Amino acid sequence: QNGLTLEMTSTAMKHDRDVVLAAVEENLDAARFASRELRQDWVIVLEAARQDWYRALLNASEASPEERELALERRDELLEAGDLSCLSQDFKAYRQIVLEGAKQDWRVLPLYATDA
Image (cartoon, one colour):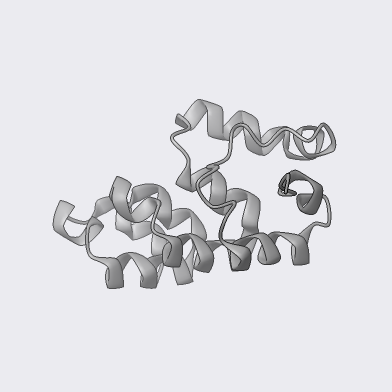
């Protein structure tokens, strides 16, 4: 019912891709409680990005809870400055995740532009 119940589940459940995916479908922040490996799984991140690309990439990062809170509070300021250093950079190559971000906020496009 509530994806955040993942926090209270066993370690085995936090490593189960199907369980984590179902939890993230309910609440993208459930990804914070998944195993490190699944927090960075592109399918999990894509599902979360469909809900909120910024929070999805923040959840996939190695940010501490304090850093995460600060990054959420300063979201607009950081985006305007072009600062995505608090977000997981591992997903720049995943076109679908970048497109999900662009659907929600056009400011993501220049941040993911690559030098060719």
